[in-house]
Length: 480
Image (tube, rainbow, N blue to C red; front, side):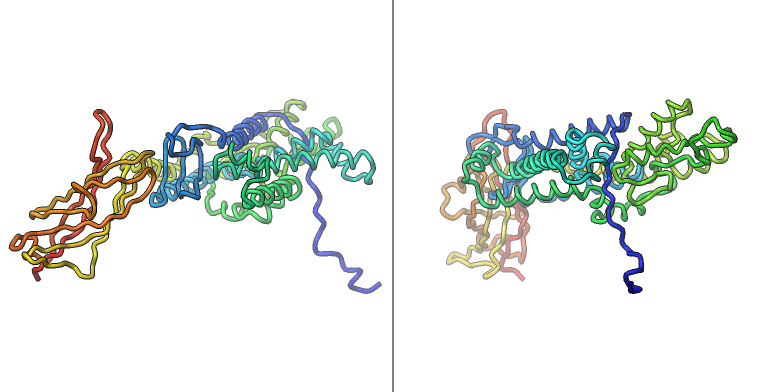
């Protein structure tokens, strides 16, 4: 035997994790959140919303073809991407806030990897049984029972993945139409490709990789340490109460043992396969299942609950000194979390204000710079401008263009009678307009004169809100 053959391997094969079923407060909370989030994800594309004859009737739609985003009564256009940026900022601040207050609660309760993994484990438990039965099936040779159960489980996993990928593509086009096209083979190849990729990734990540995605692929465990401090609540084991651990409660010296009976219940229910009694670990997603398992055991052996609990480092110091832990609200509401909350709320309020202040008509004005102005035969100074009007309403509208200035100027829109133009529904119109100043006027003799170009609905309905906006620009005169 060579020396190379006798050397131990530096890498150990992965041991699959088979979490045991557990009941308790945190497990119930996770079930409710999973049902709520999965229900919203699968159902949302099918909610209808009447937008009129020219717009899709889907409540939530990312319309890439027409570069718009619909969310119930809200419609976001490409130039309003700051709304999306604001939502992303709020999502980031929300992660900072929750991590600072209670550790990786996002990972434990709301992360898609966690949610779909919980669903896959639920299916696995239905088909193969609880932890001991799944361990036995995993270790036994491939026989009829194992082939049958694995085939059923993998089929259900594939159906879950297919539903996941299918629901995703429904957000990007009219869901009923796309479903009909998918079933008849008439959908775009991109739709089939997207569904296939998401089906495969959901099947693999939720069914097989599970905790490996959290430990090796996700960057969040490595980032969270910068967002936590000694007052952050996270799951911890009260070592000073549980040690020394031991099983034999009636043997000699049992009165010197701690509350932990070393039953391994906390390890058996952990979806990450870790032992929380070894201390805080990067793999811990603070899902709270070990708390439920330990509390159940403490009830059975007649010991107080909370041997494993949400704790902060400051609580450990206080409890070791014989002092009661801080109130949970003192951990949650402290300067750091209050600052995150204020920033989060400020961005949200800003987005709401901007949403209600925006106009249904947008205008962009580009002065023609070559030449800056033209002198007509009667000495009138003329400037030319390119104007783009965007009608964000669901029907064609007539809009009137006017100009105001501290100096007397007039305006003409090329090819438009009475400076009124018609802009199609949900479309953009480009027009050329001219602003003129009579010879000898202040605007004609000045080098630059501030002007404001207004656009408003040519015909308004009594009682309705008038779509009206303006754009400031300059008029270039002959002065120097």
